[in-house]
Amino acid sequence: MKKLLSVFTKRRIIVTFFLGISSGLPLALTGGTLQAWLNDYQLSLTAIGFIGMASLPYTLKFLWAPFMDRWVPPFLGRRRGWIFICQLMLCLAIASMALFSPDQQPQSLFIMACFIAFFSASQDIVIDAYRTDVLQPIERAFGGAMSQNGYRIAMLISGGAALVIADFFGWKVCYLLMSALMGICTVATFLGPEPENSVVPPRNIRDCIILPFIDFLKRPQAVWILLLIIFYKLGDAFAGSLSQTFLLREIHMSKTEVGTLAKTLGFFGTVFGTTAGGLMVFKMGWFRALLLFGILQAVSNLSYMPLMWIGPDYFIAGIAIFIENFCGGMGAAAFVGLLMNLCNARFSAFQYALLSSLSAVGRVFIGPIAGFISDSYGWTAYFIASLVFSIPGIVLLFLLRNSIENMLEIKDVELSE
Image (cartoon, rainbow, N blue to C red; front, side):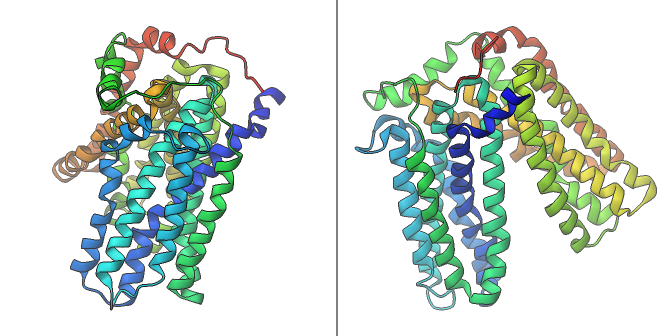
């Protein structure tokens, strides 16, 4: 147990946590927090909705990920150099938001929001690659969990605390403080270790775009592994797509009740789940952990069903929200670790960006299906369907057991200092 807990003290794990904070901080500043600022100035819903287009770089980040594999900054190494550049540009862009007023320069705010989203998405690319390169294979589930925990804490800061700061001190002070906090995050970049294994970057554009595909598709059962990436979290995404609507419409809970429960118990459930999941991978190994977490996140979707029989109940709803987020967090920790282990360090920025985008395909298309099933057949069918949609991922995991274990090559790996 002492050896297991020692992972919390490893420099690369601690740095991963703080880089997760750096990664999560900008997102709300161009999303919900910015919407609240615009709403204070009574901008039209059309204008506020248009601002949402600023988040497009997060969807398209795989387009320039290869170039961050190819070119190496002249300082702080291949990954940390890019991270620092992105953090510096984010500091400047977030601070620049304080120079504009929504009622007088909405176009300028939109442009700065696009800059923030671009450099934030670029930072995500390189932080994901750095985490993949610097962590040992057996550490990647826990390192991914700590990164996600940092990310969620940052979202609370920029999405929740930022609104409180704006209420007391105004929006300009709010964005200046968020810029200063981003500046503090650069400390983690400077303190981060370099990967133990040196890697030769791609030599040209062809190498950084074409070779990552060839490298992945040459692996045994590569196509089936890609299908596993799509389906592993599909049932969890299905259940989450309408869980709040279920509580509001079917159970008739108020928005305040749902928001309070989801924000608090959902947050703690996910944080505890990802941390526990990351630690359990050390003890169980990748296949058994992925299998157990896949089953748990599938069954946990049914924890909301008792509410259909007993009606609004804070205690039962709280338990359901915590269980779903806890089990989903465990699955997410192992899944992020799996994605990292599937990446070749030479192309990790591009390959991770592509694999993570592929894993989001199901979430994009599952919402309409969930809505149709709940509308046409009721909520019982909806929750049962969430369980059914989890089965393909579990079956694929069984079929790919040998390939996954051989590819990850982490049998009997000891934790190094």
